[in-house]
Amino acid sequence: MKIESPTLDNLKDLMVTLGHNFRDTQVLRLALTHSSLIGDGKHSNISNERLEFLGDRVLGLIIAELLVKIFPDENEGDLSRRHAELVRMETLGKVASSLQLGTFVFMAKGEERMGGRENPALLADVCEAVIAALYMDGGLETASNFIEDNWQPFLKLNPIPPKDAKTILQEWAQKRGLPLPDYREIRRSGPAHQPNFTIAVTVVGEKQFSGSGQSKRAAEQKAAENMLKRISCD
Image (cartoon, rainbow, N blue to C red; front, top):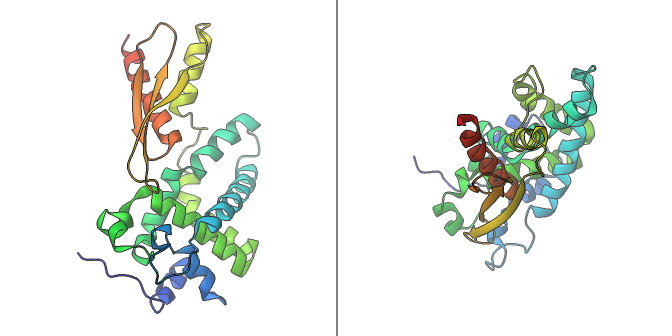
């Protein structure tokens, strides 16, 4: 199905989805403005990137507060692992997809043709920017209500603190008295606004493995996962 470009009028539908009626609709529009529009001669040279920065901090604070309340008996390390899982790009992308944020993003036609409306990294950035817009227009309580509503499924997903592949690999090496795994970038491809990273991981005595992702963190995790598959078979 063809997705029509968003208009200011249908932002009313998005406000219903977000659960907040914006007094300043321009801040919401800015949150939905992708950097691919900069320099096209028709739009302001401002995108949602600064709002992404703010939204990331607001999300981190509110998730930390929720975790302290929900898991009163867990230590700082366990809470940190949960926090990292809940604020990572993949989780943000899933929230954005569930809200269909991609249908509301203002982006260049070229970006749209390359699948921008379904790009997990782009959607994660937009989600952060929308959180910032909610915070700026409605305050911390509004942003908190949005995050609590949309992150509940992920908060309940793991009854025990999650361990990511990098943590598991690090613990595996430490138990054997080996140096910590070493990660290095070996390749970067794609346009500057949508890069794809390839990261190699090495552990003393083991074959090197690599992984790719739309962020360095995702690529490191994939590389660690690929090495763990080999180690678990030995």
